Length: 217
Image (cartoon, rainbow, N blue to C red; front, side, top):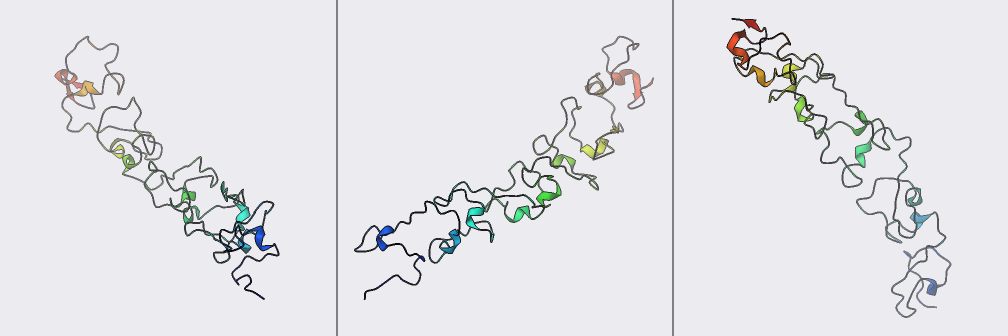
């Protein structure tokens, strides 16, 4: 008798005036989502009604699986249970929160270090095979750096530390050092004068001929 609903109209048996504010122009339609807890995608498919934005996580799950509110679609919470890989496909800084600016520079998969793909806590890095470049991460920001009792040096960690995993067994190479011994050998950074040492304020190298052995003149 007169023009009816277009083919792209939401499938409904509700009266026109239930949603359309104007019965003259039929503009400004507002659908009442109260009580709707499932089936969102039957309308929100990008044709009948607005669908997922281009930045949405790639998923075939129902809208209501993550979105707490089927009215505002706010407060979406994704259930990560059972997900053990592929974190970066969503956690890329666009689709979902990515690595923070203080994160270790790496192209390794999130799950390579993070024990939990839900909280991302308890990250443990596998140092096997790493023999250099320690300070690129161990700078006190991205990872634990030198402790406050460490002697002042700009040398690479691996110059003295035999193990780049435990950092144990550090051995300083004294070759070429002919002065300034007390800068480290002060009883704090490194072993200082023993208790039976003659009382003196003279520099170590005044009497000791070779750094590292403490042999005497």
